[in-house]
Length: 246
Image (cartoon, rainbow, N blue to C red; front, side, top):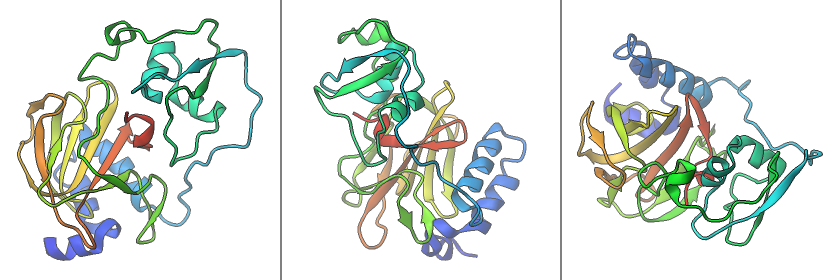
């Protein structure tokens, strides 16, 4: 199959992804990440996506008032709790973003913490997540696209717009990937990866270390409009980027 044919098949291009996973990366740890990603992205109809449970009885805890530019990721770091617990106990849907002055229940916490300096909560500049490109979310995490669930967000923007590293990281993939087009994958050395797909061209190469905000690619044009497909992955598991982005 040619690259153009694979591109037209979009997110349903199973053979191209399988070739990448079982071929070039067979002895690389990235193969495990991509293999698990394939199961989530292209698994048969038996694949199930987590849905938020109905209201659960929360444990003891306190409420945190969201400060400007805070994210669920930052709050979880601040209180040393699992971000999944914040999502579950606060019943936060996929398309939601937390807002200033919103109250977030923190399970197990006994004392509220104010807006502490980033260095005291392990979220220094470069370690937080940031938007990789300017634009509007056209397709949210978990929504359907060409018969498959979206494992990230599609950010509608203009062709040629700069794509920037969401966090400090190392380039562990920089090449064409079936179903994704020209793709960058960054390893952030703490179990998290970010994926930048549907690019026109790449400006970094395998093994490069990049700082947050560094130019790594240019947005390509994908019908019907130019957009960047962006994913955040905790290990091999796709997580909702909106919970990590300011």
